[in-house]
Image (cartoon, rainbow, N blue to C red; front, top):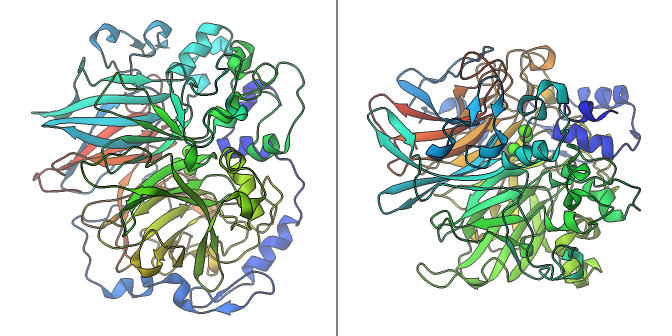
Length: 626
Ligand code: FEO
Ligand code: CA
Ligand code: CA
Ligand code: CA
């Protein structure tokens, strides 16, 4: 495959290219078996070949949805297929900031509709492809930290480049438009706007110097020619979902870092390279212009990425910290909660087909205003095992359990998880914890390889547990309740909050769970966040063709789910081509900030290039929205 074609692939299809193991089932046979597994909508769910038939409890309390009075404050909207945003009657939206918009007045001319972003100002503007986002306050100031997950080279580079950088400058620009933006926002007569030149404003890119902490910091696996101590990596990349600490800092999560590395001359592949999809040519040809990305020069550089990185959004001179204690994988987001004894708990998903869900538990306890030293560097990493009987366990990734050194369990967490028999999941995306009840939800976005093909480590991916459908193109949301209503517990019970599907096309398991109807259907749940009233906001990143098995689902969307009744209602539709990702609220909860990533057409400008943007959404009557 030629370079220019690689840049057109989705991240998960790029990983498939790196993991070309032949399918172990014929597709037709898989579909036949799944189609014959009828009865789900009648309240009986059959698990994979040879497994027991289980009762309706797998779908939790959602079956009573239709009987409840709606708790939604809005009238759900219809699907859309156009290149615009739609919100319910009584609500309004506007763009807060777009790819290329200046954070500082000296970069006011950085963006032009024809040329895109000028390289010389590319680290002083809002980046491309907005993702995870959190809002912080400092007195009466409001500060948003927000990820720019990746860049689309064909949008950013001159047409002649065909999506492949032709110079060091072009690589620099692509690198600068990823990473993290910290920006002050303020509410004026026209709603929220970015405060240009605010002292809080900051860009964090591939070039920002960071520190490592935790057990793997300074280990041989972290040492490079440029950093022989293995303590000061440069940059954070492919920043996907987010989190916030109890002490008010931002957690940015490094997801598809593997695609940025390539080899200019042949290098010997390792088991870890295979598991993490590292090797061959890089997705963006960075290795041809910057030796840091060249596996032939810096074989350990990829080990310094794939972490949860902490940023103090209130101090622009602070040094970001990569926390090795939280494990290295394709981090989606990091949802921090507290155990009943005060320890810090962080739930994390690894977004690749057949990978795992993790949890970190600190050794120390957090008290408001107390020291946070060591809370994200000293603790235990666990991986989830889901049983078919709707129970589950957190298995500690210790050297005893894995046969690996402590450093290896953290740098190669996927391999450690495989050693202890963790459950292969249908691409874990965001995890969100209910603020008013002890439970957590994980969006399992989809997995066309479920029951078809092992994961990149060779672990089987049988149908069963919270991954009940072969060739799962719709996705589902699993939730768990920790034992003793304590996030620090080693065990839990689980059910499925929703199985997405298309009841107009299928009358079997692919029709979805009972809380999916013709009027609210969607595919590929991804971003999730709870509002303070305990409602679950669900964002999608799926097939928006509105055709075939996706007919009637329209563009990607944001829905609101009631955890108690299972009812789900559509709140927002995105422009065609876009996914909806990233959500936070203003301090007064009157405004929601929503990320619109990789839009199509010429959204939002109406002409020229499409521009990934953050929008604000509010009620015209000024009532609370979050
Ligand atoms: Fe960056 Fe898994 O989404
Ligand atoms: Ca995502
Ligand atoms: Ca996704
Ligand atoms: Ca995506």
